[in-house]
Length: 129
Length: 251
Image (cartoon, rainbow over all chains, first blue to last red; front, side, top):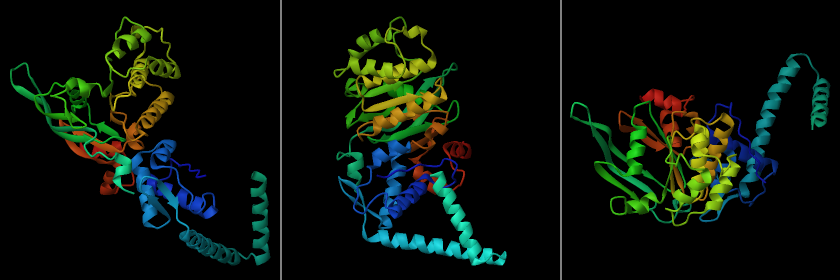
């Protein structure tokens, strides 16, 4: 099931926020390949936003090949792109991690220190859940 | 996906206003135009915002539209012209305005029974159900209601006959912030089936920022701009874009 929450304080067009949320839901597997997305009108009402804004988000995602529409039926998650999307996300994370690790080493931390820090953060997150 | 799924198969559906103008004679005897060269179309399934500064002509436009009192122009619904069949068109309009066209000395229940009788598909139960949902008692007398309650009562009345088009003039004024949200959500529910549409005139522009599909800016009796909010946002490409920003920019 698709579960989207919009953050009102974000200075990003709402249609882009929806696109990001849907992409993340696809990456995380929250919505599966070939799964049907809520109808434009249902999602618009649920998010309390205009129909045209929702339609735009779906159309942009369709252009990127992440979802596809069937006239009269609705929109579905495309399957072939999910892996690519996930790979993209992973490589983005890798890049950011690399920067972080460089910064840590510059600050005089060892790799073992960094591991420890990550373990602590991980534990805390588990507790929060 | 094709436009058809969103807009319904029939292109002619909806309200169409062409070359509409409304004039009055001033105390000096000359003709003054309150609204002029008004052209717009309301497709089923969408919320249309109407904004403008005080005196821009919003209420005049809405009132002359509802009453069918205009000097020039053409108004039609689903291809049926208002001149030919004013009743057929009016039956499909739902009005929210203040002061309301309700019987002051009667109860809400009696208002439904008397005024609802005009509509072939009137459903008193639906009306009373909505009254209750909005926290109103059917035994309440109209004259004792607050402004906000009058707005709620009119919305409930609309539920009694489900007109194709709601025309709402400042419907959220007098409503507390919490109910304002519920009210706007109710409008969204109303258009969700893709068959109904709403014309929402307001000076509280934040009410329109997220839910309006299309926006019309009225200034000195003329429509300055008319388009989907998404298009307008792209066109101005401004980080702080909002309906209020646009209104300040244009008027």
